[in-house]
Length: 393
View: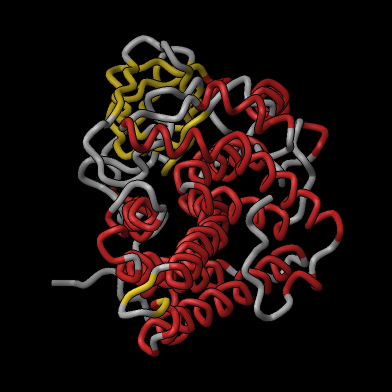
């Protein structure tokens, strides 16, 4: 493995052998088998073939690592899940997005809110990579304001009838099963909509400057009939939606560290080799300042996510703490990508180096799973006791 890690504060000593083993196995697989595919796909403006990669990831326990083993998951802890997200996004954000969606936004709600039959049917198939899922929440006119979603579900003969649309859905055009959220008379509910259901269309969104290697799609529902056995019975409140989102937000906090590590390592190696005015540019004070700032912020982010993982593993973690880590670490990765791109000069704009790719990806992450503004307001409410999401005008 070429990458040895960025670990200025010795966090490696705090990890168990099992945690390091999962991380190292993922790192070796991603570097040898996946990273070349990412670079090639990005150059050619093509998608990664996740239907081919998912089974390989499944064999390594990369899909649903935190899901119990009885349902095909890995039974891993939160720190293991975080380290996995770190390695995935160090190669490309679309990979972390894929695994986080499968694990936190598809498998997690089925595990937490589904029936035993639903768990046994879908979780082992997704964990093995035989089936791919997506999470249908965001809409054309509704993003952060989930409570006012326009997709509706009404009681019909033997089940429900769904109408509406979702967009910016990771794995939306390729998913075999979609966890779709819709408003009902009794609140927001989750429905399992299989590929090919009558009135259900899945379309690829191709005009995007971020996550270019990953599938992002649109879901359209036109009088789609969903039988009662495809409703997640335990998902009856808006709070349950955010329980799923917090799984993905936690993974993002680690994924952002991976992207920042990639940018930092690229910039460090480049500036030590690149010569201008008769010396490596790493010998100049302003360049060293930028490298040091990147290292400091990465180290702070590592400590945040590590502590958060331990809190979640002990059952003491709060969703506000997840918001703090997601907000801080994504902004940190944004800075590192921007700084690395600058330190590489014109070469920073070349596809031959990863910072420009990470720059685009991290812009998407800055927005999805709760924008930076939303996480600011979550924290603001927690420390003041006053919500600032809405105003009476």
